[in-house]
Image (cartoon, rainbow, N blue to C red; front, side, top):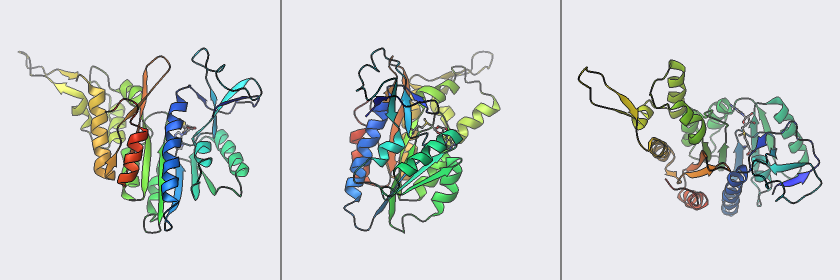
Length: 297
Ligand SMILES: C[S@@+](CC[C@H](N)C(=O)[O-])C[C@H]1O[C@@H](n2cnc3c(N)ncnc32)[C@H](O)[C@@H]1O
C-alpha cells in the first residue's frame, strides 16, 4: 500500500504509478504460493528477488491526481513498497528470502531492511550480478532433492536476463520465475523497421533470446526484385509473435507458462509483459489467473 511520508527518498528508485499493478499481481501470486506450500510438511520455500532494488520506491506522480489519491501518513513524498517488502509481508512467509542487487546505495537500504525484519524473516542479501549468482551458485545447490521450492522474481530495467539464466533456473526443477519481459521498451527499441543491426545489437538480442531465430520471428524476407535485391521488412504483429515465441520457449524448458500480462504506462503506452513459468501445473493455474486479467497472448 503506497503511503505519503516525510522520509527522504534520495537513494530510492523512482517508479511510475503502474508499478503498483506489477506489485499487486506479484503479491497475489506469492500469497497463494506460500499458502499452498505451507501445507506441504516436506517443503521449504525460498523467494529470490534477483533485481531487488531498495525495498521501497518513490512514486512518480505522472498522473496529475496520483499523489492526492494516496492516504497521507505525514507529508512530502509518496512511497511505494517495492518487491522485497511485498514478499516479506506475505503471510504465511517464505522460509528464506534472498535479495540480489548490484547498486551499493540500494544494497545499504536492503541491509537496513534485513535489520528491520531480523528475528522475523530469514534474509540473505547478495551484492553483485544476479545472473552470475543464479547460474553459478543457486543452480548448483540441488534445491529439488533437498525439498526446497521457490519463486524467482526477475524484474530488470531492460534486457539484463540472458536466456542462459532462464535455462539454469528451469533445470533446477524447483524454481518458478516471474519475469518482466521488456517488450514495449528495450526490445522494441532494438528491433528497428529496417532490420539493420550492428554486431553488438545482434549479440545482445542473441544473448537475450538464446537463439538467433528471433530474427525470423520478427522479420520477413520478400522475394527478390528484378535486380536480385531481397528486402527484409518487420512483420505485422511482430511484437505479439515474439511474445508467443518466447512463451513457447519458456514452456519447453519449464513445463508451464502463463499468458502475458501487459503493463502500460499512464498514457496507454506498452511497457512490459509479466510472465510466469514453472514446473508445477497448480502454480501455472494460479499464475494464469493472476496474470490473465490483462491482454492475453
Ligand atoms: C526495476 S529495478 C527492480 C525493482 C524491484 N523489483 C521492485 O519492484 O521494487 C531493477 C534493479 O536491478 C538492479 N540491477 C540491474 N542489473 C542487475 C544485475 N545484473 N544484477 C543485480 N541487480 C541488478 C538495478 O540496480 C535496480 O535496482
